[in-house]
Image 1 (spheres, helix red, strand yellow):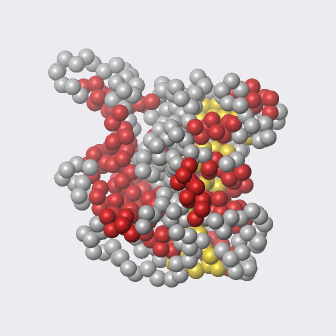
Image 2 (tube, rainbow, N blue to C red):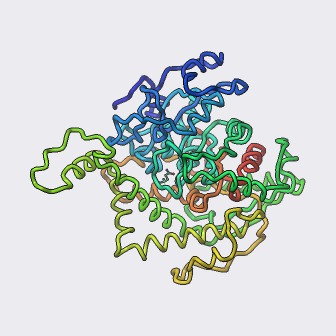
Image 3 (spheres, helix red, strand yellow):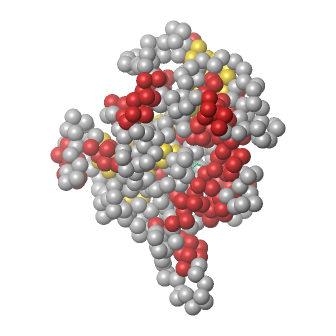
Length: 514
Ligand code: GLN
């Protein structure tokens, strides 16, 4: 295992590079590392920060590898905006963390550096290294990326908090893309407050980054914020803060495969909220397109990935090791196939093949375009149940411009029921507790089944990703019902999902609920 530094935490390879251990304490120590480029706001107390290794860092000790052989020697000339922003707010980078190659996976096992582990259990993926770094106390805050659940799922398996912001809120400049229309930077911590302090208190939510074309413009941010007027919550006191809040329980998330202990924890949380009084309500809602969301995600994400990864051809990007043979055959793709054949792991190759197929002229109508329509329906489901309107919705012309008429018949269009006025949705983060690593590691046996099982873990996280909504996973203790113990953490994750740009309220409410 080619580690750059010391450190292996939690028995697995979670943090595989460390700059050096920075003692907590004097700001001067923290400052000396980086004072040349970023002037830290001295009002913010220093905190330790771990960075998922698909986010660019610039010190020579820290490569940015995406856990892929193809980038194993890559050091970035630029620093990701989010890393600079956090350093300015007191973050001291203590290491880069292990992940599934390019963020593709659900157990952090598809890594060139070997799998992440929390004891005998899966740490979840793809930001498993970041989750373990936080759960083991190596970092107070860890950055991850969440395309279809990669911050929330590991948070759920390791018993920490994982927050995926609204799409377009936090700059992705310097984050290596997986699927552009879905990728977000996410945060992991042991408490919601730590994240709230940076994102809301530290004003990260408000900053437009001109270097990221998907970063919401200042005008759009203002428009989004105005939709929230009247809903600002200044107090973080329990009871008071939750007053008048309606939580929706999406019925479609109560699937047969849901682990009994998680169903129990979910029902228990709902009961406790209801018992709070003060106008707190818990109501069932229906999001009928949910069950098509996973399939749509696994068409859209690989399609975008196959396009993104085309640039790793050994010329523009990518390591040539060993150097490919000279082009004597006259065929142009000798370099490409040698570099890509050796440079990508099996899961990444699978996604490239899948994505190239669904974008091909013979398949695009049946796969990619249908998946985009399902995505639209998923977003519409959410918009129908939330009390707040979606500030990005341009009105009815936009709805009509999108032809939904030739969708497969089994997708119901009008059967939503229940109140439309919910503030947040409350549901499990994942259908199961952390599985044993041995059960998910790709050992050549039952390969197809294990791959598909891993995809199924994302069933509750991808809907919010497809709709670009903010979502947070918070840990809840589980009682042992099934013989599974909830991994090392002894807990499962419950997810709160909010309307677009309702992040500040989502974080306050999550802090009060936790
Ligand atoms: N497990 C999902 C996938 O492999 C999500 C990954 C992510 O959010 N980066 O696509």
